[in-house]
Length: 250
Image 1 (cartoon, helix red, strand yellow):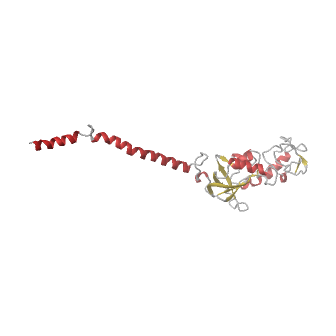
Image 2 (cartoon, rainbow, N blue to C red):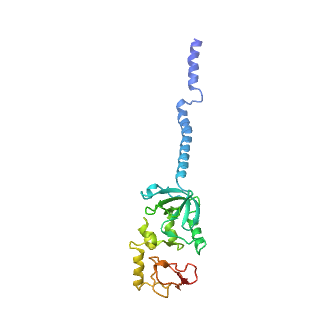
Image 3 (cartoon, one colour):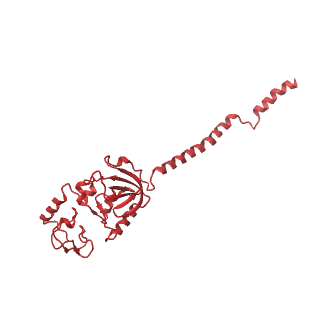
């Protein structure tokens, strides 16, 4: 009988042994300690993935849908700032559509390049929308509008007064009707018609040109658009007739 009783007693002691804890006491703790690291790891993984797709500027990723469908759309990184109107994106030379800057050896050329470097330094993420009407490029350079760090470089160059609108290309550019191009001189009528109208209309004369009447910009005029040569130019010279700053235009 002692042996017979000992068996159930032993079984009872095993069942109630270990401080009174049952197996159900441990399951919630085990579940917590095993699942929590997975949740943390998953969160970390999502954060890393998010950072890899968002540019360092915190701007949303550029998409090819932001470009027109007829020409090339380049999404890449700036690899070099050539001058105020030309940069390289993934080693491809890109010329600003409609916006031009002085050459580096001309007055204002270095300042224009520094300005572009400030807005869109080497390594920045950019989107280039090639001009549908100028797919032939310019001297081996793709011609287009460049978006970088939330701004349009073509527009910023003009707004800062460090560049000028290449109005002769308005009629052959996809971007002639964009607000910034219109603001700086691209009109639906031709530049030739505009320049004739300027000569005939004797109002809105700009004080920078006291010798005869030239309206303020826009439209932006070049020396070839007017008949007068070697005339007095005073600051601020909105048409930039006095490129060498000697007080004499054209």
